[in-house]
Image 1: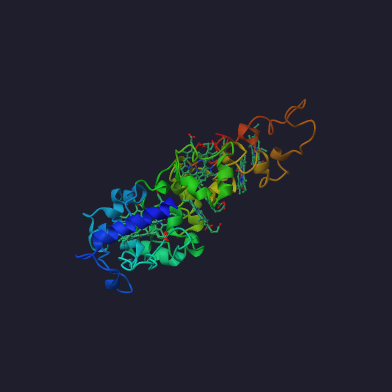
Image 2: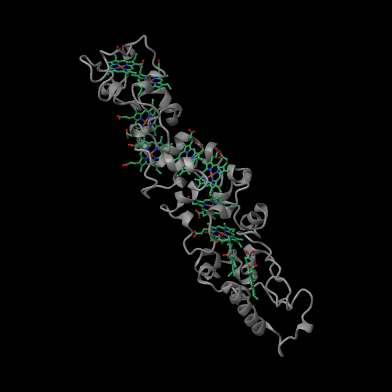
Length: 314
Ligand code: HEC
Ligand code: HEC
Ligand code: HEC
Ligand code: HEC
Ligand code: HEC
Ligand code: HEC
Ligand code: HEC
Ligand code: HEC
Ligand code: HEC
Ligand code: HEC
């Protein structure tokens, strides 16, 4: 109730301040209301001066010196669309029409209408591959992730970004809580260190196009070239690792030796049948199974440059 009263009073005040002098009588106000010039931000801030909205004046979108923002010519209408009817002086009991574009709440415009505003200025750079990308194809609004009125858009901040992604990708939160994980919840890394949520040329919105190129931007020492290469490492890191979190050590998909035995068959030394006598804790545990198992000896698992490192043992 109080909120509504506030608007009535505010609207009345605006009416007085916007009205041509002497003050307009109801009868003089045409059916669409008295249209003002809505292209300056001040046309809107007359009524919308709450701190949570005027914070936008401290963002990149309201930098007058940057002609790309078009603040001087379009003002708030850059995003909210033609709102001259909405900003007009109303006749008594006249229903104020909605602004050209609404981003949140029950009157929100369709997603494509919302995104049209943002895309009209953001087409190159990081948003270049937006059309047809996974999020665009799923009808996700730019403003599902971005808050335009916030001084510091939370999705651009490492610590707050994952919270936003988790609202739709809850399974990723579960992964991030597993014992081995990339330090995302710790705020040392963001999802956007590996993903470009606006779209990429490669799979899974990965920033660098391929899985390996993405991983190797940080783990360059695994790139090689090695004198002795381990085929699956060259092929794809995610054959053995899971990127988001694992209950195994070092983000492994499976425990060693089982991981290795997916590919290395049991006709060789490495895969003596497991029995009650060779498992860890038994009388004669197999050295292939205790401690670091295969890695006891094959410690250079990503590849070796040692002349004698053909079996990745050094
Ligand atoms: C004369 C006062 C007045 C002016 C001027 C005004 N508005 Fe509003 N605006 C309102 C009122 C009152 C509401 C609340 C309407 C409601 O809740 O139904 C509102 C609501 C809104 C909303 C939210 C709509 C929704 O459905 O959630 C947006 C966005 C908005 N205004 C943008 C603007 C923009 C942009 C301008 C300038 C071009 C502007 N307004 C100028 C009075 C004004
Ligand atoms: C860069 C695009 C952009 C510009 C420029 C912009 N807005 Fe907004 N506005 C939004 C988005 C997006 C929302 C939805 C809330 C959010 O994500 O911050 C919004 C929400 C609003 C709301 C509704 C708030 C609510 O709580 O329902 C009002 C009112 C509003 N804006 C007024 C303005 C005014 C006044 C200006 C100019 C001073 C302006 N906007 C400039 C994008 C913009
Ligand atoms: C009138 C053109 C225009 C429109 C419309 C527009 N932007 Fe921008 N935006 C800019 C400019 C200019 C910058 C600052 C220059 C830059 O960083 O590239 C910017 C910067 C940004 C940034 C980076 C902010 C930062 O702090 O670094 C984000 C995020 C962004 N815009 C998102 C949006 C979203 C979401 C919408 C739609 C709701 C939108 N923009 C609508 C022109 C626009
Ligand atoms: C799924 C969430 C998500 C959606 C949807 C999204 N963004 Fe972003 N956006 C981000 C994240 C995360 C970043 C930070 C990227 C980084 O740090 O590398 C970002 C950064 C940006 C930037 C700043 C880029 C820079 O480095 O200066 C702009 C501009 C931007 N987004 C515009 C848009 C526009 C326009 C749309 C809609 C077409 C959109 N975004 C949709 C998550 C999103
Ligand atoms: C509003 C909901 C929403 C938010 C917020 C959101 N996403 Fe998504 N995301 C989706 C939908 C829907 C899909 C497509 C369906 C699917 O694959 O689950 C998707 C797909 C993806 C994909 C897979 C793309 C592919 O090709 O398989 C990645 C990666 C992704 N999102 C990352 C992110 C990141 C990073 C963030 C935060 C910056 C984020 N998402 C925020 C809804 C969201
Ligand atoms: C260390 C790099 C890295 C980080 C950090 C990362 N991802 Fe991923 N993400 C990947 C890779 C690689 C894939 C492809 C998985 C595959 O091919 O097995 C992927 C796939 C996805 C997918 C689609 C496929 C699936 O498994 O559902 C979603 C959604 C996703 N990531 C969301 C996120 C979110 C949300 C965050 C932040 C909390 C995040 N990612 C952080 C590397 C990363
Ligand atoms: C933006 C940089 C970055 C990218 C890209 C990246 N990582 Fe990492 N990675 C890290 C950081 C930081 C750590 C944590 C190191 C620490 O805690 O000292 C880490 C740790 C790891 C670990 C060890 C985890 C543990 O529990 O000990 C593995 C395995 C790993 N990353 C694999 C990958 C794979 C696979 C990819 C590609 C899908 C990838 N990383 C992409 C930065 C990155
Ligand atoms: C054949 C399975 C396999 C593949 C494929 C693989 N790794 Fe590993 N990785 C491992 C194993 C096993 C460990 C644990 C090594 C240890 O504990 O000594 C490990 C450990 C790591 C670590 C943490 C310890 C360290 O050595 O820094 C990182 C980082 C890592 N891998 C990155 C990668 C990257 C990047 C790729 C892709 C280029 C990749 N891995 C491909 C099996 C693999
Ligand atoms: C996805 C399948 C795959 C996985 C998982 C895998 N490897 Fe391999 N490994 C290969 C292939 C393929 C070769 C190359 C075989 C060749 O050249 O004859 C190879 C080669 C090797 C070699 C050298 C063999 C030789 O003949 O020179 C060793 C040692 C080895 N792997 C150990 C391991 C260990 C230890 C693990 C577990 C940490 C592991 N591998 C996991 C596929 C795999
Ligand atoms: C005690 C050290 C040791 C352990 C533990 C060990 N290996 Fe080996 N592995 C070797 C040595 C030494 C060679 C090379 C000698 C040879 O040619 O037989 C070798 C050779 C291999 C080869 C090449 C093919 C072959 O049989 O010559 C593969 C594949 C292999 N190991 C995989 C594994 C796997 C998988 C495990 C874990 C289940 C494992 N190794 C555990 C020492 C070890």
